[in-house]
Amino acid sequence: MADSLVVCDVDTSLIEKLKKFRFRKETSNSAILMKIDKEKQLVVLEEEYDDISLEDLRNELPERQPRFIVYSYKYVHADGRISYPLCFIFSSPVGCKPEQQMMYAGSKNRLVQAAELTKVFETRNADDLSEEWLKEKLSFFR
Image (cartoon, rainbow, N blue to C red; front, side):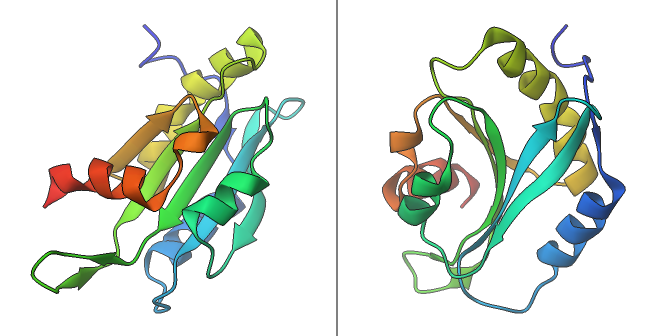
């Protein structure tokens, strides 16, 4: 049921920004932080970060509110190859309002489809957001 529930649409300018972000040429870790505008029922851009670690990004997240993150990560493989996976992270901390959680959870799939992302991760604890956590999640995609 929750998979087919679409609570909020995605701002068209955000979709454009995500497409540009996907094809960017920079090699630093970067992120797009998104939130839901409750009045407009729209997923919108909250902030863009260039050259930011997951640990620093974690400090930018609100303590008791969900957020969507698209994170471009410089991933060095065991054999020395480098790739730049685009990761979608849904941060839904314990203690946020149930209606907020429902709104975000119901809008997640629409945003993932709009951004055309395949590496989708979820965390209920912002403290999890670390390079080790992400490497563990990405190890599935080797």
